[in-house]
Each structure stands twice: as structure tokens, then as C-alpha cells.
Image 1 (cartoon, helix red, strand yellow):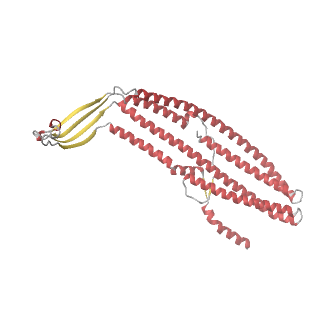
Image 2 (image 1 turned 180 degrees about the vertical axis):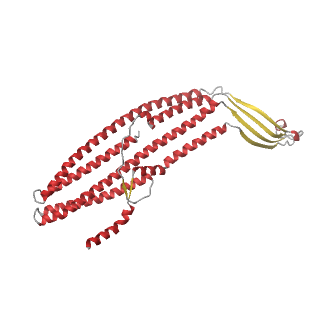
Length: 414
């Protein structure tokens, strides 16, 4: 009856936690981080804004219509005042003015190309930021998952020790081994309980950090699925977002050089106006009319500014090429380094799993001998701690391996 009552109380107490606890995976947190990221949203807004800049440029080369009005009066008093030959004494105008720059299709296409390049540059920067965000979230997810794995191992060991406690208490009472040995076992059990409580607090803290990075407001406990960390098939610098960054910079430098040249070509604009313009001196009712014309501008000498601008552009391109070559070497070196470290951890995991088989076999054998008093309690506890250390080592090595894979798949050059 007491057992049933205890079971019912336990269920009632744990039920809220069972309802709240859910299982979530890495893709869920990556998606939430992308949705909530203000940086990625800002990049998207920048891309849309550049599109509007392109529309504004096209409009600026189209017909521009303005309405201008003017009313002036310049009196001459006792011979004092502005010269009427200049001012006519008074002037009234109300005009509708239309202006239209005349440029070649290549000129407009070259200037529009600068917006397309900037749009691609911003989109590529957004991709790099998304990659950095994915790496940050993945690393924290793996860390949180590792804390839960450590907690699960601590619970497993604690459950095992509690089961053994009943048996060992009987053996101590039967004088199969000394009471001091049994007390040593109880100390180990209590230490394991403390370790479990510490790991539980750590798991909750790491999960809170994960929610914080993703922009989530959630304090409930989430069971995390094991992240499926697979190494990508290709790690070519030329196909990476970094290489694309330098290619886009090269296109920008080339296009900027063309725009510098266009700025020194002659410009022509046509204009037309129509309306009323009169000095109100002679037949003002007949001063309705219109006019048309052309404006022409030809730069002749600018103090060698064009040459200086082109030289600056060339220096930018030289720097871009050197930075690209260095970044490529860094990228390839980082890939080799991470691949080597992953292989090392895989070998450590293999060795640890092999040793764990022997340790587990030893524990099973000592457990049987413990009941007959043929093995000391300290040796038995040592074997349990060795098993715990091996399991912990395997978990940590596996987490380190997954973190390295995350770095490799989302490689970030500093």
C-alpha cells in the first residue's frame, strides 16, 4: 500500500515536468535563430533598399517635370534703384519645365550594374552572417546536448549505485565485508548524487544560453535530439562564399573604373518650358509662349583627379588580389587542420569504446565476487569510477568531434 501511495505521489509531482518537457532538434533552433535574427533581417532590408536605389536612378534619367513661378518688382524712386534694363522694373512668370538627360544605353547600364553588384555583395554578406550564426547555434546546441548526455550518464550511474546499495547493505550486515567499506560505498553514492544535481543545473543553464542565442523566451526543459553531424562532401575555396566575396569586389572595382571614365564624358540634356513670362511693360496678354533647348557640358581639365581616382582603384584591386590569395591559403589550411583533428577524436572514441567493454566485463565479474567477499569494496568502486571516466571521456570526445564538424561545415575565416 505504501509503495502504491508513493508511486501516485511521484506521478502527481512529476506530471507537470512530463508535460512541459519536449524533444527538439538542431534544425528547429537554427530556423528560429534565422527568423529572430535582426542582423539577417537588416541585410534583407538593405537588399530591398538597393532595389529602390536602382529604380530612383532610372527615374533620374527620365523626364523631370517642374512648375516654376516668379513674381518680382524692383521700384526706382527718385532715380535710385536697380537698372530697368536688367530688371524691367517687374517680372511675372509661371512656367512648366521639362528636362531630360540624354545618355547612351551603355552609360545607364554601367551605373545600374553598380547597384546589382552591391545587391550581390550584400546578399553574400548575409550568407556569411547566416553561416556564422549557424555555427554559433550549432556549437551551443552541441554543448547543451552534451550537458544532457552527461546528466543522463550521471542518472544511470546513480541508479546503478542505488540498486547495489540494498545488496551491499545486506552483505555488510552479514559481515561479508567491513562496515567501513560499506560506508565508503555510501560516500561514493552521495557524491554521485551531488554530481547529478550539478549536471542538472548545468544542463538547464546551457539550454537557457541556447534559447538566448536564438532569441527565444523559454524556461522549460527541452530534451535535445542527437545532432546528425555529417561532414560535407566538398570544401573548395573557389566555391565558397569567401571566394565569391573577392569575385564581387573585383567586379565592383572594374565597374567603378568604368564609372570614373563616364564621369568625364560630355553630357547633354534637353529642356522645354511653356507658360507665361512677362515684364508687364508691353502687351502683357501676348506673353504666353514656350522655349526648347539643349545643355551641353564637356570636362576639359580637372587637375589630374581622374588619373588619381583610377590609381586608387588599381590599388584597391591589387590589395583585393593579395587578400584573396592569403584567404585561400588560410581556408585550405583550416580545412586540413579540422579534418586531422576529427580523425584524431574518432580514433580516441574507438579506443575508449574498446576499453569500456573490458571495464564493463570487469565490473560484472567483481560484482559476483563481491557477494562472496573475494574482492575488496575499494577495488569494486575503482572499477565503477573507471567505467564512469571512460563513458565521460567518450561523451566529451564525441562532443569535440561534433563541434569540429560544425566548424568545418560552417568554416569561418577571422
